[in-house]
Length: 285
Image (cartoon, rainbow, N blue to C red; front, side, top):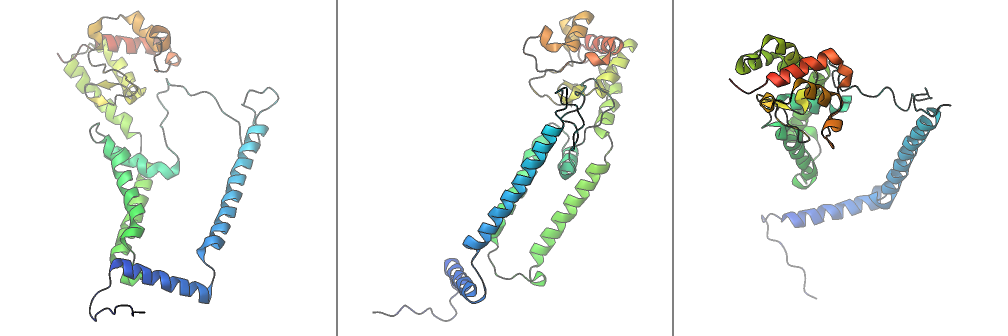
């Protein structure tokens, strides 16, 4: 049988050959010093995963059953708290939304990419690129070297990633309601551009603080969601104050199928202020 061809001295082995050699050394290490990853470590991981899932399911069951209460209304204080609390009030002007702490970095990232044209970068672009790099890292760096001093690029990249995540998380945790203040700061521009009458200014301020710009746009401020229309020239339709109030109280009653929440909790006086502002909005004058 012919002998395997010898590689000439000085010829660098291919990446595939190097990977095969590393795998052969790994198999030798397993034989000499321990057990292979499969099935031993994989079995341990599976058992631990089942334990974690079982604990989560158990806690969810305890929370659900102990909060059911004698009146079955879901508000009874159970061992882990009530099933739910008071329903959300879409008409609030004081609530400052905050995500869970582990999303603070993304929360503040969206404040950096706050313009409508760049929101895609903050929500999809940057996180997706980071995930792709994370998944690709084991295939890019296949060296066996693990000493930190011999891996300066990896160490610097890891340090910058941890630092940036920590800074973004801290900034997100301590951020004030900058979004509302930024919208309020635009109110004088609205008044000037649309030449709003004095009695429409309170409604403009309420429009800026009640979260209306989360779904509607007005003179370029806000974001369009769920098909919500731009309200810059809503007054040109001459819908009337009464119509605006009825629509704000119960949008789906006036426009069947409307996904807009009810704002009747604002009260008659503030609803009328909003209606006056909307009817006075006839575009740039």
